[in-house]
Image (cartoon, rainbow, N blue to C red; front, side, top):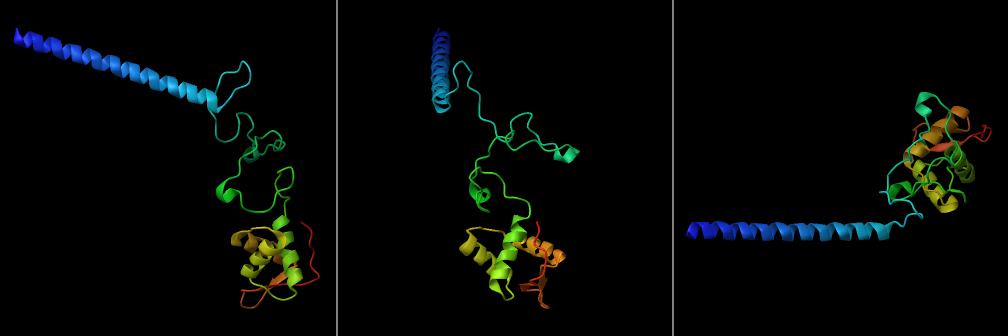
Length: 171
């Protein structure tokens, strides 16, 4: 008899525990649904969908497969944050800088110096005079492009660069 009463008591405790768990789970899920509904108000009649990272479906540019890229308006704007936010100033429309901008900016800075300059001096001048933050790798790449065009030349020790004056500055 004592064993039967103990078993019944354990069963009752287990039933209460299950009911409490189910009630707590349901309350937590309701709180999540409420919070999700408040965080992202959806258009009238549309179901709330979770936010997605990356490009929206169907807006892949296809550059790797040789197809022409879609217009910039087709891609969703990406929020700038952290290191991606730094870099060249973007126009009022938020579009990417034009191709060849780095080389043009570096060439302008070297012309303004009128003497050989190191990449660190170029970078400092870009930040101070033009309000542009550029990585050293990008500066080195731009200097290589300008050297190929004949617009700049390295010093014999390859630590400084000078503007030749007669080079082509086309992008």
